[in-house]
Length: 343
Ligand SMILES: Cc1cc2nc3c(=O)[nH]c(=O)nc-3n(C[C@H](O)[C@H](O)[C@H](O)COP(=O)(O)OP(=O)(O)OC[C@H]3O[C@@H](n4cnc5c(N)ncnc54)[C@H](O)[C@@H]3O)c2cc1C
Image (cartoon, rainbow, N blue to C red):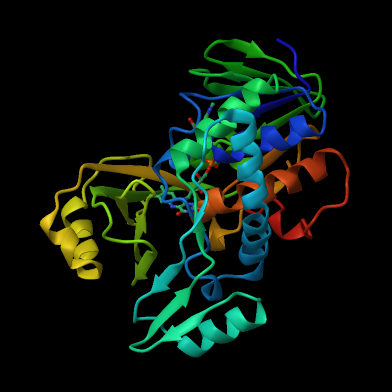
């Protein structure tokens, strides 16, 4: 197998990186320990917006907002080339009473050009917040990549990197050694820290539990209150999430009852329904939610695009553009320094 660039990890970040790089003419192979997009990228809510942006540093919001601006055209192009609709939808979000400082929220939105409405009773409405349906976005991306000639190797765990003279010369995998003519990129989500070892960035698993309800017509906008959100899907399902837990790599569902109660406090009708599905995913946690998008500090041909924590779906297309500008030595759409490898 020959490729210019090998990407380890076929989550939303690895797949969107592949899509951007192949668009620039690179020959790309992506390898994954399991099936593409079945970890955090499958488990997430698909909300394309930081919760809540005024509580984050500029490094988080500038990358998220650049990505949010790319989403409509990107998902349309993916749908066109794959035949799969990622269900990008501007459904808006209502933040229910409980915001610590309404004044901070409204002045942040006003100064960042984000439309908002303050409704009686303390509701804060953000009409332009959008969402995608994660499994559909992954399917659209995977098919689009296959159509572009990208190889996605499944069940192919990267065990270690083979190094020579300060560069990587191959990846040892469960299916034998895989070599690239040029560069390697780690997009292994919550496992990136483990794979890169002590020289790598601080990336660790943060568990999030979710519930799914069949609740046709009950809701047409995202509701958010005290850290819990409800996301209505196009087909009437409602997602309720999520927890934020430091529990290592354990994905056991333990908080379904608690989450159900919280969901019913927001939308009482959910109290009469039983969830049709429940699961947990592992976010690639990072300090202050700032992802690492950089060349490895000690290895010339190794790049990292990981650690997007709570907003990897939101940030994926813009992060892919930043990575590609690094690899191809082009001017980046954003100052890339804040995304350097931090310890
Ligand atoms: C419950 C929950 C809710 C969320 N809600 C949202 C939301 O509403 N909006 C939003 O923007 N984000 C949300 N997120 C965050 C978002 O899902 C993640 O930030 C994003 O999916 C990270 O993508 P990734 O590709 O880096 O990681 P992943 O999707 O985890 O992909 C990493 C891939 O690397 C593979 N891998 C790991 N190690 C190896 C190895 N050694 N060799 C080969 N392959 C390997 C894995 O198998 C996996 O497929 C949520 C996450 C969770 C868990």
